[in-house]
Every structure is written in C-alpha cells, then in structure tokens.
Picture (cartoon, rainbow over the protein chains, first blue to last red):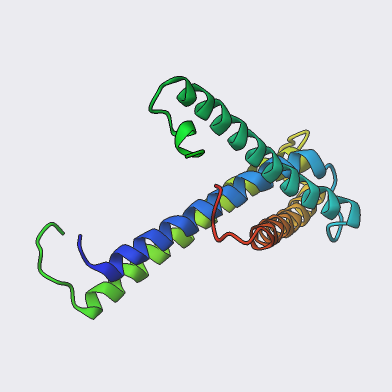
Length: 89
Length: 91
C-alpha cells in the first residue's frame, strides 16, 4: 500500500503496540519481584522497588546490547572488510 | 487492498479507527491476562467451593494495584527515554 498517510499511521501504531507489550511484560516481571501483598495503595517501598526494577531492566538491556554489538564488531574486525576498520578511517 | 486506487479520506479514517480499536482491545487483553495471573496467585491460594468475600475483596484491591504498577512502569520508562534524549531508540 503506497498511501503515505497510512504508512505513517502503521509505523506509529506498530510502535505504540510494541510499547504496550513491553510495558506489560516489565510490569509482570517487576510485580513478581516487588509486590508480595496489596493494600489500599502502592506503598512507597513498593513504588520505589518498581521504579528501580524498570531502571535496572533498561540498564540490563543496554549493557547486553552493547556487549553483543562489541562481540559482533570484534568478529567483524577479523575479516578484512569488517565494519570495525571503517570506524577508524 | 491490492488495487492501486487511492483511498478517500473517509476510507482512511475508517481504517485508522478500526486499527486503533484493535490496538486498544489488545491492550485490554494483555492487562487482563496480567491481572488474572498475578491476582489469582495472590488472592486465591486455597480454592474453596466459591470465591469467598475476602478473596473477592483481595482480587479487587490487587487489580487496582496492578493498574497502579502499570502506570509506574510506563512513567519510569518514558522518563528514562526522555532523559537519554532519544525518542524510541535502543529497544
């Protein structure tokens, strides 16, 4: 479909749906780590735990992504046309 | 859909509304699955012949806290993305 307005809409909608799924999945992980009882509101300890949990989840994701790309560029440097060499031209 | 006739605005609008509705439904479905999983575990530890009133009360409260938790996650995640100055980068 070549309609630019629809194409833009599809890209945005896809991002929105992916974000929803990610938030849901992080919520489930962090709920297991942080919520062992419920009262009439989230208490400050639970809220802090969830906030830390999300931050550390993102740290973890970034660290692993970086490690993986380093491992990728190391193996690329071994080949003469690897992208590692292009970086230092 | 595979023909190359351009869509008119009403058709576009209709498609976008339908898709938005489907995204909302998917969101609700995910929320419900999460609440069901977490709150059944938390509140119905020894299933009896019916849902006891204490279990119902627990389920209601658990659902409210689950929705709070989703909001905290969403807010924290968005704040972090904004601090790092990239739109939806990195994930």
